Length: 321
Ligand code: FUB
Image (cartoon, rainbow, N blue to C red; front, side, top):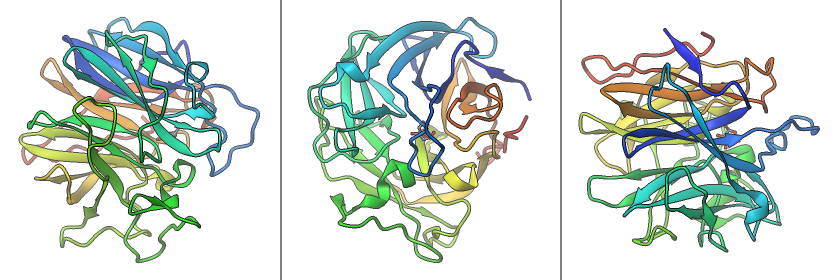
């Protein structure tokens, strides 16, 4: 299968990809060299800014770097770490949603606004009220509403919350306990706040039982939602088992039934992705650490075609290829 490194000039990761005005826009996070040791808190992911990339030919065309569009120094509540962002368009304005640690080292979600998909993005002064954890995917559904899926374990801090409230002590389920779920929330009409309380997004097996914490295919982080043939596809990273997996359902809020592996482990600790259709073909955007010689915090953007079988099952892609 043909794969392409999209932007060999720099280390970027976590690609959120959308088609705006007929062109493909890539919203990655931006990796930097770091002197910290690698740890489960994610201190090695020191990302300080975002660039926007775009192309009109995914596998062969020029990938344009539109430059830096937002940096930590622009954001009044900034502590550190601009991790996986996403962008949505509404009424000709572009809204970037980003997770960032505040001055107390707690992740919240910021919003920044642009007049064009390539930015620059101007941040709101405060984070979204009630926001927490990381890795947002904003999905516009057929009802015209926008829904944000988010959450990530370990360094992503999801284990610090239950029922949208901060716990006194983090709690990570183990063994046969149900795995920690991703979250979904409808956005307000002005796109700047949550319109309701976030709900859990549960992945179940074929018998309808939630995947358990010890299941290697359980949700960890990096959620993405797309629709194919009228079904919702909820895809995600399994984190410490290093796969991209997916589950399908008939309802945007889930539950989603586990279906299989999209991408087997890549070189590097993290795996992360987005899925889009462009000019009649489907694509998987992700990252790996091959070009940096395996440094998990220096990742490179990669893309390949994605295929479905006649029943709508996604064909598994080899991560090491
Ligand atoms: O890039 C920092 C974090 O690593 C992301 O938020 C996760 O999804 C993982 O890729």
